Length: 249
Image (cartoon, rainbow, N blue to C red; front, side, top):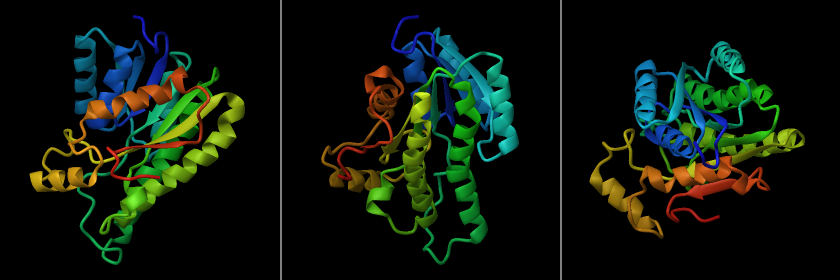
């Protein structure tokens, strides 16, 4: 198969459904062999079924990004297949986490958020960088909420802000290895994880955007493909908000 990612192996965490699956499908269509690293086995297997039914290359490895043991097992299994050329650290906890003020968030909920979103992103990079001997690209995934600070979502916004700082430091540490690290900041995007959001909220969000329509996954996946590809080969340590102009920076 020809394309920007022909002969490349790309690992995408949390890619059993939603935006993660959209990212996987996009790069697979451009020739990549995609590894679906997903905690939910059913969605992981279903993602592979959907991709291989299109004649695309995909495999599934059950993975818990918050577990060092699980991430080490992922790396060990991947090592048997050769080099990794790209990583999208997409997995995270985002659904149904809002609603409580800063002083109502339970400490164990706060810790879970940090364990998944922050520690999990770090463990992903820590486990997979040794497999990127020829260099490559890592895309971390934050959120445009870090720019406008929505209330009643402090633990989530804090975790996503940490990912931006992590991205910048990682870019400096990994530059000598020819590994680029950039951060994607999606806005509210329609998909499996968000389709139950009331229509009024979608309308309110779109009204505050410059581009006044609901975001779909195909508005986002091309940016991930760009960041993974050589089209962005002189770009590292950067953040890209893809939210229709909801936030400007």
